[in-house]
Image 1: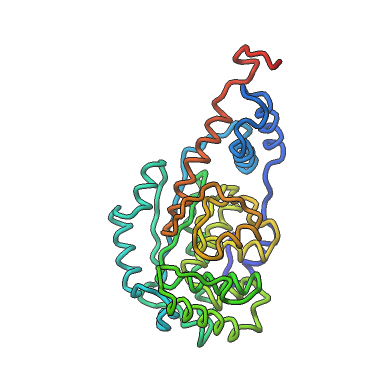
Image 2 (image 1 turned 90 degrees about the horizontal axis):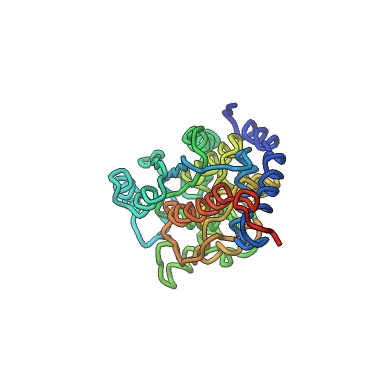
Amino acid sequence: MTFTTLAQFRTILDDLPQPDNTARAQAEQRNSQLTKPPAALGRLEDLAIWYAGWRGDAKPEMNAPQIIVFAGNHGVCAQGVSAFPPEVTEQMVLNFQHGGAAINQLAKTFGAKMDVHAISLDSPTADFTKAAAMSEAEVVAAIKTGWDAVDPASDLLVTGEMGIGNTTSAAAIAAALFGGDAAEWTGRGTGVDDAGLLLKTKVVAKGLELHAKVLSDPLQVLRCLGGRELAAMVGAISKARILRIPVILDGFICSAAASVLEMSVTGALDHAVAGHLSPENAHGTILKTLGKEPLLALDMRLGEGSGAALAIGVLKGAIACHSGMSTFAQAGVSQG
C-alpha cells in the first residue's frame, strides 16, 4: 500500500480496517469472569477490551511498544512566536539521540523501542502567514516519513514531536478544523509572555485568513498550516491503523495533527486513546471534540511524546490484569 499524492492518501483513509469484533466479544466475556466485582477495575477494563479488539486477541499481551519522535522546523518562527530560537530543534534532536531527554527515560522505563526522525531541519516550512507551509510534494513526503517509520512488529505506537514554533502550527490547524476564533486555540507554548501570546494569536489569525479558501479540506489544512513533524505523525498514526496497532496520543500538538485524520474520515482515530491532558490552552477542547477521555492529567506540556509514554504504564497495567488474572472457575472462587 503506497501513495504519492494527497488524493491517493485520502483513498487509503476511506477504507480503514476495523477491530476484530470476535476477539472483542471474547475479551468482554473473559472480563466478566475475572475474580473481581463487575467494573471494579473501572476504565482499565475498557482499555484492555479495546486493545484486545485491535490486536485480534481476547487475551493479549503488550511486549513491543514503539515511540517515534519526529522533528521539524517552522518558517512561521520568523514572526517571533516562540520563546526559543529554531536552533533548539536540532539541539534537542541530538539530546534524543544521545539518550538525555525525558522521553528517553520513559521509553526505557516502559520497555519501548524509541526512534527519532529529524525531517529536513535545514529547510524549514514556509511561513504560513505568507504562503502554504508545504507544497503537496513536501507534505506527502513528510506523511510518508511517518508511514514508513512504524515497525510492523510493534504492538503499540506513541508519536512525539519536537519543533520550535509547532504550537502555533497546531493552534492554526485546530482552529481551521474545528472553527472559532484564533484566541480560543492559541496558548503560551514554550512560555511566551502576554505580548507574545497576543502576537502568536494574530499570527494564527493571519494564517487562517490567508488560506481560508482551502480550509474545508483537512488534508489541505495540514499542508497549508502544518509542519513536517505534524504531517509525519499523521502518517504514522494512519499506518498504525492499517496494521491494527493501537495508538496512545500525546498532547496538544499530537492531538491537533491526529484530528486531521478524524476530520477527514469519522472513526479514523478509533484505534487511539488519549494519553494525557496537557495544560496547553485548547488541548481539552480538542479531546472533548474527539470524544477522547485522557488517561492522565499531570500538567505535563513537554511534548516529545512524554505524556503518552507515561500512559503506556496504565495500558500495560490494564492488559496485565485482563490477561493474567484468574477466572472465578480457575481460582475456585464463588461468584455468589
